[in-house]
Length: 209
Picture (tube, rainbow, N blue to C red):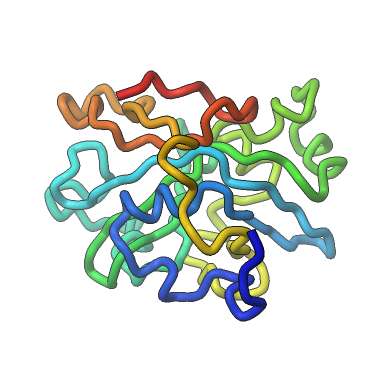
């Protein structure tokens, strides 16, 4: 779908929406990281929404505010990058308004540019679909780490390019529970994970809900 040149890169207004809507809107858009003179990019094919203080799976549940999650309390359009198991980075797109700590986890990409560099970073990968098929994998492949926590996603280093002016049709989006948040009880089962249906790059196909 052709979109106006002025909308080619996501601006602040694009991110200033609730995290569930943004999680769907990000599907089919392109994540770009320019690093070391190389453009690394991939189409976003899987996301998870986190609903902030009411969401037991969110890092800001109950109003929790720490040095680690401080970026999540900022305005929509910033990155929230954190470590899991002290080893693997995960990237979130902060949504909504400042002091409304909601975000969207980017779970998987379809690799596009800089694939040779991605293989260098992901030595264990054997095919393109192994490069970015999970939140830790895509951060490793794309060179995204805690140094980028809090970065403005409307800048020139890490940003979202808009390939679509409208959200993918519902028939193209598979929806299911989030992954790895069993501690959150009933919140773990809520249908807040979204993926482009039948895309081979997703971390795992969501069971339909």
